[in-house]
Length: 216
Image 1 (cartoon, rainbow, N blue to C red):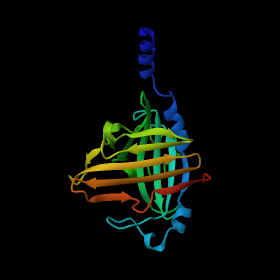
Image 2 (cartoon, one colour):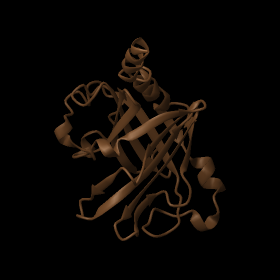
Image 3 (tube, rainbow, N blue to C red):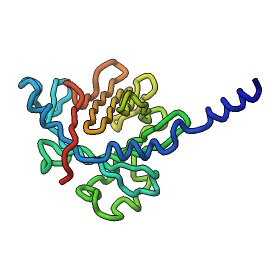
Image 4 (tube, one colour):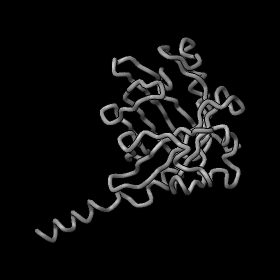
């Protein structure tokens, strides 16, 4: 009995599967487009992002594995563009994945000076000097928790766990779901104020349904 308990304690202290963070980063990396979803959406939801409205726009999303050793080992830089591959940049983030005893966790960050990195995902060394001080994150409670669901990875941030204070000073909970398949990625996030009002929803109609595209 004691031997069994000792084995169980050892297993509990061992990462779920060592190297899953790297494998998930490899899975996500690539170029995606939700053009098919945007084209098929009802006319009344084909609208630019807005607070309080029901909308879905077209986004081209690129996720690139970058060398940012001062941040983490498995790092993705994401750059989204509105309307098409040559549209204006709508989002720049850093996703840092890590193995834990409870599975893969992903810390996501905004960048203090994102213009420094615009269009530079493929430039050697562009992220080598990036430091945590140049990033804004939301702490362990708001890390995305990934689990395997069939052949996919599903990441969640739940309102029960994650409360943040926005730059405006307003407190809100975050609700995020990311699903990474082999050739598709879905994404949706929402912030809800203490009053129950929705502060933002990206998008507000249905999750972005990104499909992998050939690299440009």
